[in-house]
Image 1 (cartoon, rainbow, N blue to C red):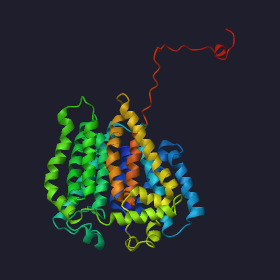
Image 2 (image 1 turned 180 degrees about the vertical axis):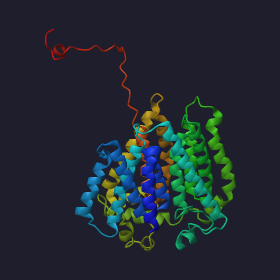
Image 3 (image 1 turned 90 degrees about the horizontal axis):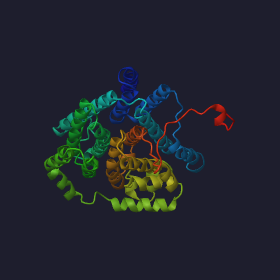
Length: 427
């Protein structure tokens, strides 16, 4: 019942927000809050509400062209290859909702609804969420029994904070994705948006440290350092190094805990064993895979640990095993296209699109690192948040168009052509 109340309250807040701060802000708050605080069914409903509202607001048909091949492939796979079951169907629904989350982000970030006021409110929403997660994390570190993880997770992650999520690694990934949204806002012309975004990034740094998640800490550091390197050269040196220096200082406080984790588990568990299982599954089901969400069911027949729920710690191998090589390419293809577009924008002359393109390029290596060392990015709400962030980035890059340069040509004023002359008629 509490979940239903939260869904209704969230939908109402979105409707209220649309008339006060705009749909871009309302939908962003809706997705961020849903993915961090609600259950899967509630998240699906809220993203559906946001998508329907945005489509109605913009009065246009939304066709996810980039994901259309994958959607067709998924439908054919369910109908002809994998079938439907209590495991496969929910996993397929998650993938469909993820595409919806991308579209929501795309519309929220589109030039039609993006203003300085939107940047301010989104930055405020981000810092509010980060500070709340930080408060929960500090309380958990102090021994408070709030938002406890499951018993199995608690045994494996003792001494680490998980915030409002079910696992420290999940919290770290969520904060990394939120930081990717906050980075471009540190260059907003609005002073409130800039200050709120910097505060959110400093808070994110502390949260990531408290999770003691090795990969997430390295990924966050890479995100900040690459962002600083990509900043325009005319930017003051102090402004470019403040975040990387903060990373280094904060790292000293968590260094002992991180080194202790490396000493206890230098290889990160039975990763080689899990990879061997994935390779066997992919070789046996190369083209079309075993079906969405069906990895444990099929892989459990090959390995006892996999039967207990352990997946390969590699997103690309996991999706190739479940969806087949064809499905994995269709799923991740739009992301590759988007990163290539971001690189083109960075190489072009300065434009309003460059800050979000810069953040996306800065996040590519960290997210790739997370993908090849774990499977958490495609786990439930984190997948939806990941796709939403990618969608916002794509929306913010819509106002950039490649320039076509024609040397030895001059711009001349256009003249109005009489109708008959235009069609070859006589004067």
